[in-house]
Image (tube, rainbow, N blue to C red; front, side, top):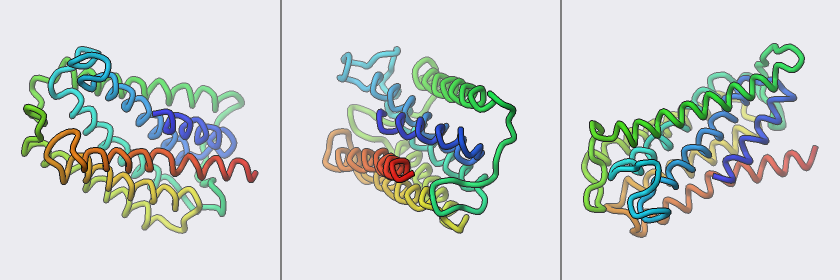
Length: 227
């Protein structure tokens, strides 16, 4: 969550200079992952309470994970479709015409929109949990979970393919492709190839999730220091 939040701040900072629609969408995507990861942690059973906070039910955490890992690829796809010819650094063209002071309002609007989206998805996974398919039963994954998780895995693969085909690529594009590769491993190991929580694959997937969250952040920090 912390890595994604810092990455979002750095990307919004680049948007402040470059006025790039693609950077704005990508920054919003990282902000989305930070907020929904926070909600996921609060509702995870056994962390802060036996059943989780925020009125979490038996399926809340699993569905928040699905919303989290299905939502970020959509932001990446939007970034890839909005970006135009790349530069050698981390900037992208395709700018937004904003009046003086409009950038701050745009960023504020983006933050509010992402917060509203995450709050809505959290409500669906808590208050509206009952009609959702059962994904975890007695600590083990159900067939419905595998159906949902592999659908989101294919969505992540689609995001990687679209990003790869939208060349030429700048530094940000290349490392974002690395992030999406780690994202694919995260989903596959955390929920696709294992049978329950807290097995070896589950922890392996979490390690790839940390790699996905930190790799782009490291590159942004290096690029920022060089300039």
